[in-house]
Amino acid sequence: MFRRVLIANRGEIALRVQRTCREMGIETVAVYSDPDRNALHVRNADHAVRIGPGPALESYLVIDKIIAAAKATGADAIHPGYGFLSENPRFADACAVAGITFIGPPADAMRALGGKISGRRLMQEAGVPVVPGADNISVDDFATAKREADRIGFPLLVKASAGGGGRGIRLVQRAEDLENAMRASGSEASTSFGDATIFLEKYVSPARHIEVQMIADAHGNVRAFGERECSIQRRNQKLVEEAPSVAVTPEIRKRLCDAAVAAAKSCGYRNAGTVEFLMDREGNFYFLEVNARLQVEHPVTELVYGGVDLVALQLRVAAGEPLPDLDAPIEPTGWAIECRINGENPYANFAPSVGLIDYLQVPSGPGVRFDSMLFEGLDVPVYYDSLLGKLIVWAETRPQAIERMKRALKDLIVSGVDSNVPFHLALFDEPDFRSGDFSTSWLEANFKMPEPPADDPRLETALIAGALAASLIAGSSESGLTAQGPTRWVQASRAQARRGIRVEGGVRGWRRGIASR
Image 1 (tube, helix red, strand yellow):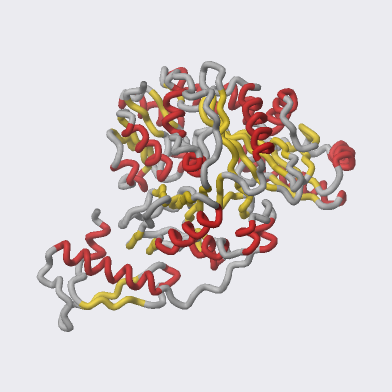
Image 2 (image 1 turned 120 degrees about the horizontal axis):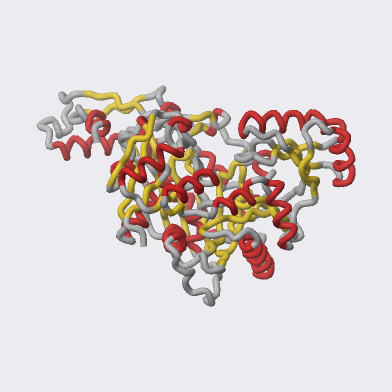
């Protein structure tokens, strides 16, 4: 097993990997940009290396800096987390050249799966069903595109081969809109990914986004850990994930898992990955793509499959160990739901929100897990993804999991930045969501945020309690509540900045103490 692992990432995923490494007796190396110098993943690591200024292109995305940090600290392996360099085959190549184990799939497998066109062809050869479409269309060849579109039928999608994160995708309802969609998709893909290659794909609607977690070792073994439901999306970005799916029967689950295993074996895949599918109302499913890394939503799989530690399996497989318990059945137990807690204002069209976290209340209790980078005093930087944390719950049934999640969301208080917690609370009261009758297009077509509440008494109570507790802990002579004591106005989040909370006595230095932690 590895002695020291560098984690080429930040935030909650870096902390997640650190926890498993610590349990396995493995030292960790953190890398950080200037805005992250006080981040929790830096504080919790055994070693930490600065890799540059805030922009990711000057820090977390610079392969040479990551490799240099690994060499300088004597790391014998690198875990890429998700995002950043996690699916970059050049990074895997660089690790191999440096003699450092890359905790992920081989570079050749990433190349085979990285392009959506090459991935589609590979799956067809492996017998995995794919969405009807036309590959490798020149962005300027409108005549060929028109013939293929007529064959496929409208509506259809124009998709960028190198696209990701919902970029380079255009829905085309009519033949006369095809040319403009091709130009727009190709231009966006060229700008974002340096590759304007596009392809056409039948628009499967209504459809669910179903994905299968799999992991493969170096001995030819592949295990599939069932499906996750990821259909609650906004602008092609996942917001809520759950396992299992209300729409997947045991028979469909077996076929999905068999297809995922075939997909992994078709390219010599190793380590963890996710095979994504679209599934229609009849239970027909089609290959979408392979995410060659650990997914944001992996905790729901961990919770419904006996508390399996997917990061631990990644480490063991990367170290050359075979997968354990190959003959043991893999069946889901209970229900898990994850909400992505993002720094954004759902009442203002989900506008990004950054700033200083001045109060944090984290939910707890049986079946509740909060994977997060948050702490009081954190100055949330502007340079990175809006994900602040992931709230995950487990219960014996889906209705129980929904109620547990609602309770946990109400217990979660983040002051200093806006968050999408109100969105999640509103969503979990929607009849369609509660019944499981939704698709990838449901949210944007049917959901509307309610009006913001005039007041949030939970935040007032929490801030007052926090101020008084800080004062008492400090042992200040002013810690008592007195009418003559100093008065402090403690501002809540920006959404509530129009009002203040008046606290009598003993709160001088409360905010200063938080900021210096």
